[in-house]
Length: 303
Length: 243
Ligand SMILES: Nc1ncnc2c1ncn2[C@@H]1O[C@H](COP(=O)(O)OP(=O)(O)O)[C@@H](O)[C@H]1O
Ligand SMILES: [Mg+2]
Image 1 (cartoon, rainbow over the protein chains, first blue to last red):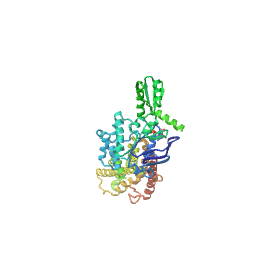
Image 2: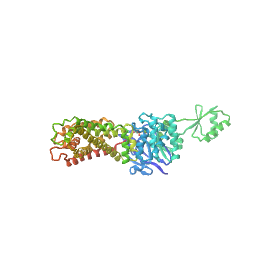
Image 3: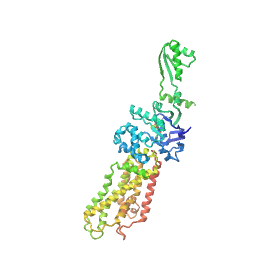
Image 4: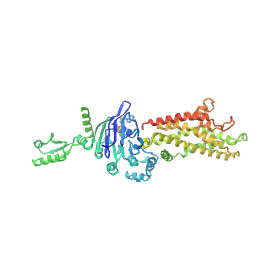
C-alpha cells in the first residue's frame, strides 16, 4: 500500500514524561485519517514532529515516501498545516496574513481570494485579525493551510472554537477534499463523534502510544455496539430468539443483540413479530469514547 | 531567500515602524542645531565640529539601542500568536528565516544612517556652514557606523528570538549600552567593547593625520569577531528552538 505518512518508532519525551513513545503511524493515500486521543495524549507533539517543528528523540518519519530529515523542504512544500491554536499576525488583516505566506509559497495571488471563499471569510478579509473571534481565526488558519493546494493536509483539532454550524461546514469541507482535490488528510481530535463523522481511517493514541490503527469500520466493530430491544414478555421473547439460533442477552427486561449486522437485526425483529411479541423499541447502545478507550487499554494490557 | 525577505518586510512595514526610524536622525538634528560651534570656527572644517556634536547622543546611545528595538519588532509578531510555527512549517530553512530577519534589520539601520546623513546636512545648512562638505563623512561615519552595528544586531536578534517579552532583550541592550560611555574613555577597553564601536567608527579622529582614518584591524577583529560570535550563537539557538 502507498503510505503518505509513515513513522517508525517515533518517540519524544519532555523531562521524565514520555509524550510520544514508539509511535508507528501509517496513513494510506487519499484517506481522512482521524488521529484520536484524549487531551495530553501526544497528538500535537506528533504533528509538530511531522512538520519538523520539533526534533524527535528517536525514530523515523517518511512523508510521500521520502525521509523528512533529508527532504524537508520538498515535503513541506506539498503539505498544508494548522497546529494547535490558530497562528496569525494580529496586526495584519486576513488577506495580509495570507499574503505574507503567499510571498514565500509563490502561489498566484488569486489563490488568496479562493481560500478565503472556501472558508467563508471573504466579507471579513480586510479586517485586522486581532478583532476576529476564535472561530474566524480558526477558519483563517484552515484557509492558510489550503493556500499551497497541498497533497497532505494536517489539521490539529480544527473545529476547536467553532460554533455548531461552523463545525458542520468545516466537516463537509474536509470530507470533500480527498475526492475533489486528491488530498490526504490527517485530522486530530479528542472527540470520538467528530472522528466518527469524518474519518475513513483511525489511529487512537493514549499516553503517547498508538493503541489502535485501522479503518473506521474496524473501529466500529471493535467498539462492539449492541442493539437493544424492548419487547413484551421479554423472558419468553428472549427464549424464542435463542430458539431461532440467535445470539442474544437479557438484562433487566431488555434483550441485547451484540455486534449484529443490519440484516441480522431485521431478522430478529421479524422473528419476534411472527411469534406474536410486540416490539416497543429498537435502539443502539451508545458508548462513550471513554468506554472504548477503557476497553482498548484493558485489552492492550491483557494482550 | 529573497521571497522570505519580502515576506518579512511586508509583515514589518504594517507595524508602524516609521516613527522609530525617525527618532535618531531627529535627535541628531536637534543636537546639531543646538551646537555651539562659533568659537571653534576656522580651526577645522566646520562640518567635523557639527558631526562631533551630533554623534554624541546618536552613536553612543541611539544607534545601539535602536538595533535592539528593531530586532524585537521583527520577532514580536512571531511570538504573539504562533507565528513561528506557521512560518517554520512552510518550505523554508530556519537559517534563511534567521538571515532574512537579520538582513532586514541591517537594511533598516542603513536607512536610519542615511536619514542621519540628511540630518547632518540639514543642521549644516541651518547653521550656514560654508566649508565644503567632506565626502569622507559618508564613508566613515555613515557606512562605518553601519558596519559597527553588525554584531549588535546579531546579538539583539538572538535575544529577541529567544525571549517572548519585549523587555528582556531591551534590558540586555541597555545594560551593555550604558557602560559604553565609560568604555569610550578607556584606552584599554574602548577599542574592544562592541557597544562602543558605532561611536568609534563614526568619530572623526583628530590625533592621526587622516581625520577619517579607518582602523581596519579593529574593524575586522573586534567587529568581525563579535559579529561571528553573536550571529552563530543566534543561528544555532534558532536551529534547535522547538516551536
Ligand atoms: N513543550 C512542551 N514542554 C513540556 N511538556 C510538553 C510540551 N508539549 C507537550 N508537553 C506534554 O506532552 C504531553 C502531550 O502533549 P500534546 O502532544 O500537546 O497532547 P495532545 O495534543 O494530544 O493534547 C502532555 O502531557 C504535555 O503536557
Ligand atoms: Mg493538542
